[in-house]
Length: 151
Image 1 (spheres, rainbow, N blue to C red):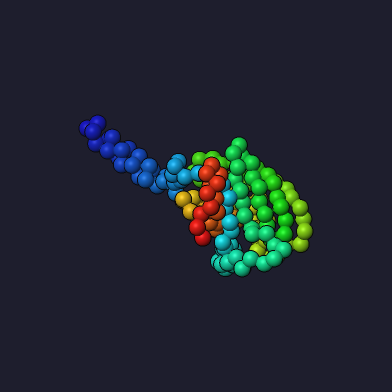
Image 2: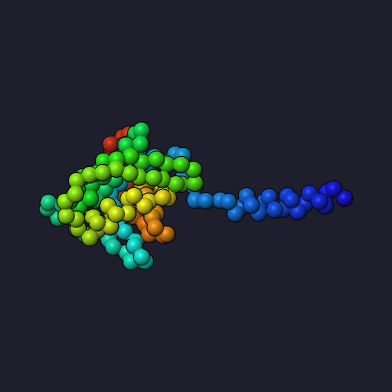
């Protein structure tokens, strides 16, 4: 009779384990390095990066060792920190210059303090903020090897 009492508990445990899975990040893939913004998805509207223009920075994030962060928006330079935790959570913070921004630069700068989750593979980083909005980056160079990825 005790075997039958254990089956519902075992079944419930298996269901809970299966439901608790979140997107995982391979420990083989490093967040450190330079990432260039390719597009922003904000309120279900996708805004792709425009062609490079003289006088504007490429919008990028550089994750360094020990939680240091450098970023460029279209017109500004930012420095700060990042911290990752379990279940792909991430927190970004910092400060920088405050010159007039482009639309994409403004979305980027305003999104950074609200980023709370990330997804990562060898060539792409997605930062999620404000209920499904996202910043999508492509890897430009790895921190350790300083090799530039082909575009």
